[in-house]
Image (cartoon, rainbow, N blue to C red; front, top):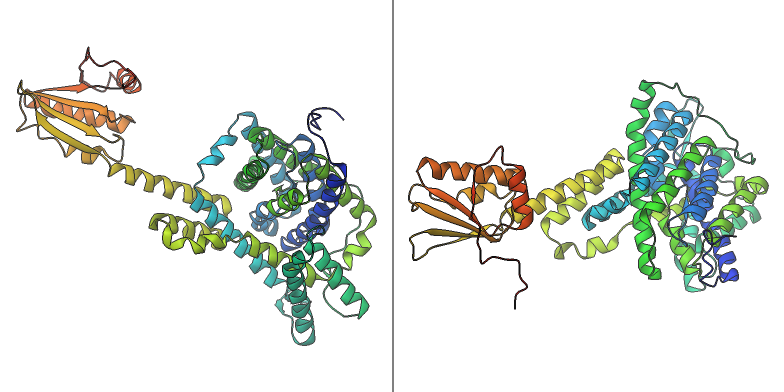
Length: 510
C-alpha cells in the first residue's frame, strides 16, 4: 500500500470499506447484467466491464469513494453499432473512446464539462431514464424460432408482471426498514427465493445467455485495421467518450459536494480512459462512473479507495464461482431493479420547477430529452442543448446594449455605451448612431462596455468609415487594456482613433 493508493493522513474505517465494497458489488451486478442483456451482449461482457472499470478507476481515479462500472449511459449509445456490426467493433470502439478520454485528461480539458448548463443535464438524464425504462418493457417479449418477437401472454405474462411488481415494491419499501443492505439486492434474493421455493416457471438470465465464468482474456478486436473501420467507429467512440466523461465528471462534482473535498477531474478522465482501453482488450463493454452505485458507496460510509477495489474483486469472484447461481436469477427481478433505476434517474425536480424556469430553459430540457429518446444519441442531445443555451445567452446579452447620448460644452457629441459589444449586439449598436446629423467630432465612451470579438471590431470600423464619409471624426475613449490589445492586433482591417485620456488610469474607486 502506498500513499498514492491510500491517503495515510486520513484514517480508514476498514469495516465500513469492506461492507460498502460488498454492497456496491451487489448493486452493480444487476445493472451490469441488465445493460449487457439490453444491448444484446453476453451478460459476461457486462460483468467484466463492472470488474475492470471498477478496479482501474478505484486505483487510479481522481477521487476516493467514486464507483465506476459497466454503466448504462455509455452502452445505450452503442446499441446501434452492436446491432449493425457486432461485438468486435464494439470492443474497438471502447478502446478508441478510452484513448480519447485519456487525451482529454492529459490536455486538462476536464474543466469544460462545467460548461454544460443545468437544463441540458435535466434533459439528458430524463431522456436516459425513459430509454432505460422502455428497454425493460422489451423484456416482456419473446423471440420465436422464426426470429419474430411478440409479447408473452397468459400465465407467463402474469407471473413475470407479478414478480416485477414484487421487486419494485421491495426496492421502494425495504429502505424504510434498514439501509445497511441495498434494497435491490434484497429484492433479487427474495424474488429468486419465491421462484425457487414455489418452483415457478419464468424467464431467467439463462434464457438470455449462459455465463461461463473465466478470467478476462487478452484479445485484440478482430476488425480490419483500415480507414473504413475508423469511419464506422470514430463517431461512436467520440459519443461514448463524451457521455462517459460527462457522467463521470458530474458524479465527481456530486461526490465533492457530499464529502466537502476536492477531486481531480483530469486525473479521473485519464483513469476512465485507461479503464476503457483495458475493457476493449479484455472483452468488457466499457463504462463510466455510476451515480447510483457511488451514492450507495458513500451512504455505506466509504471515503477511501478500498471499497471500490473490494467491490471489483467481489464481482470477479462471483464471475468465477457464482455463474450457476446468476444464471438462475429471474429476469423479472432485474427488470424491476432497472425500472427503479430509471425512475430514480428521472429528474422529478425538473417537473416541479418547470413553471419557475425561463421558457428557453424548458425548451432546452425538452429538446435534449426528445433527441435522447428518439435518436438514442446522448452526445448529440447534449451538444444541441449546449448550442441552444449559448445562442439564448447571446440573444439575451445582445438586448442589453444601450447608449446614453449628450453634447459637451465644446460642441462634441458623446455616446456612453453600456453592455458588451459582440456579434449579437453589433446591429443594435450601429442603429444608435446618426453620422449625418452628428457634429464634426464624436466620442464613444467604452468605460461601461467591452469590445468582445471580431464582429465588434468590424462594426467599429464600418462606423468610423460612415463618419469619415461625412468628414467627421470618431474617437474611442476609455478602452480597457484587453480591448486596446484586440484593436492593435486588428490594425490591418480597422481604422479608428483611440483617444488617450490622461486622467483615465485604472485606479481603485474611493
